[in-house]
Structures are given as structure tokens and as C-alpha cells.
Image (cartoon, rainbow, N blue to C red; front, side):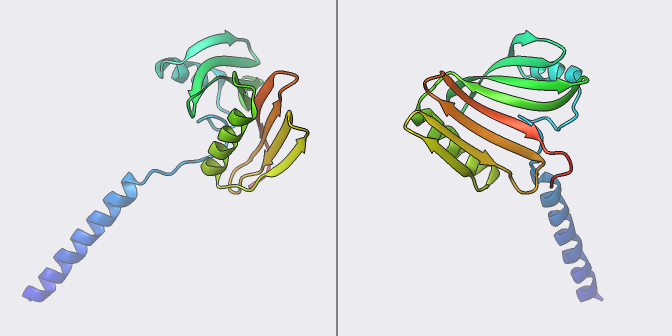
Length: 161
């Protein structure tokens, strides 16, 4: 009887430990854009970005622009809306050089564990494309030194996994 009670006690402790570990496990959903799922309302993004202390630069019915930092790079985060719902986004970087481009590319590859398609034209134009598995996002990272553009575009891929 004592060994049966001990077995049940150990089983109960194991179940409690497992359930606590499962409840504290962080599960990141990488679909959507910059922490918000596709279809999030403009009002929700505005209120939570304000609560998180982000500086709003511009707001229209189609876009919200914020100042931010990613991987020690200064940028503007742009949330794009269609009918008041999140449908796309951009990271617009201030650093327009290859060193910054490759740092951000590495950041994206690590975040999404995704293969990239690379296109290079000379030493001033580079583009990578990612379709991360398990998400519904298409990510295009583009550098055009002559045009002064270093941008990461996020697009919603409807029906994609």
C-alpha cells in the first residue's frame, strides 16, 4: 500500500512539474508583422505601441509609422492597413550600406530559421526573399545604395502555411 501511494505521489509530482513547464514555455508565432498577426486592428496596434513607449511619427488610415531599433540599427517600423486591418509592413533602415544589410539578413535568418533566395546586381543592389515555413509571410529584404533604400517588406500570403 505504501509503495502504491508513493507511486501515485511521484506520478502527481511529475504531472505537476510537466504542466508547469508546459505553461511557462514561450511559443512564438512568427506569422504577421512585428509582433502583430495579420488582421489586427489599427486601434489595437496604436494602443499597444503607445503602451510600449514607441514614438509615433505619422498616422493615417492606411499606415502607422514608428521610430525603433532592431539589432542596434535605427529604423522606422511601418504598419500597413487595409480596411483598418493589418495587411503588411516595412522596416525602413537609416543605415544604407552592405554591412547593415548583412547584419539584418543574419538577424532575419536566425529569427525565422529560413532559407533565402539571394539576388545581387553589382556591389550596391542586393535582395533576399524568405518564405518562412509555418508562417503566412513573404519577407523581402532589399538594399539599393544608389537610391538610398534599405527596407524589409512583409507581405501577407493568404492561405499559405
